[in-house]
Length: 109
Image (cartoon, rainbow, N blue to C red; front, side):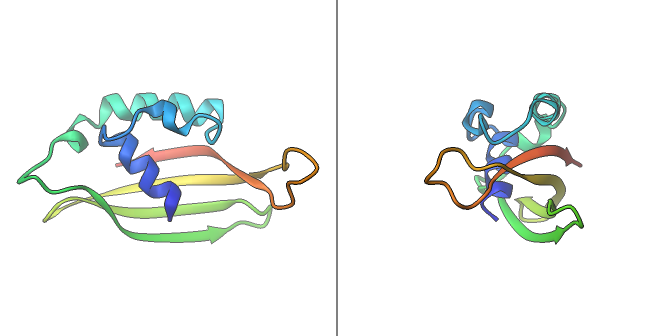
């Protein structure tokens, strides 16, 4: 899933948090700042490997939101968990037909 990869890029320091501006609501944005500071071990690159999303599961809730659980590989034998919630937002403008998605919650362990 594209968004899981973007979150991983932010948490590993490969992209700035501002690259998710407009896609993350205020509470989740604040949580990402906290996780970025708390997960400094995610930014270490062992043996030059690039972290990647190993597995991703998506669950649709009754209210139409998506709850996503991902396993990320930081190194050959180092895996971590990443979870987030995406909620549909109203499309902007008359030409927009599909809803846009916003991250409203995020957690990493």
